Image 1 (cartoon, rainbow, N blue to C red):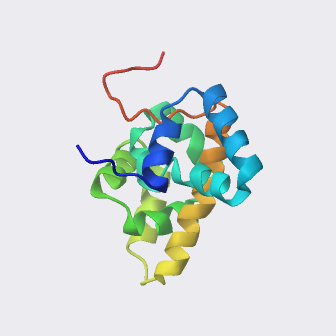
Image 2 (cartoon, rainbow, N blue to C red; image 1 turned 90 degrees about the vertical axis):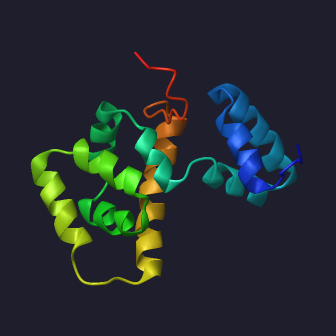
Length: 142
């Protein structure tokens, strides 16, 4: 098996650590290379990872983000994420999201900016322990 290094692989490893271990590692990296620490922090979770949120966590997140941002951001997301959000969103919000998805074409840069605005909130909630992205579906949170 060949080692597939790089930022993405390092970010995956960091995301798998406990919160305290992850903070210690990022703090050590930050002392040597603050930009690398920030890049790793941003790369640990992607917009499409929101499909791993529980329905309750998703509803909690929806309270803190703008529906306009979510509608824009979903334009370039995976079908699995769109499906997860649409299935677990209250009807009124779902209709608003659908209208935004079907609206006029938007610049890709605007869509990416909307995703980043959402991910800033997601990362802050993860750091505070308010959200947990669980990619291992064999584990459940209670």
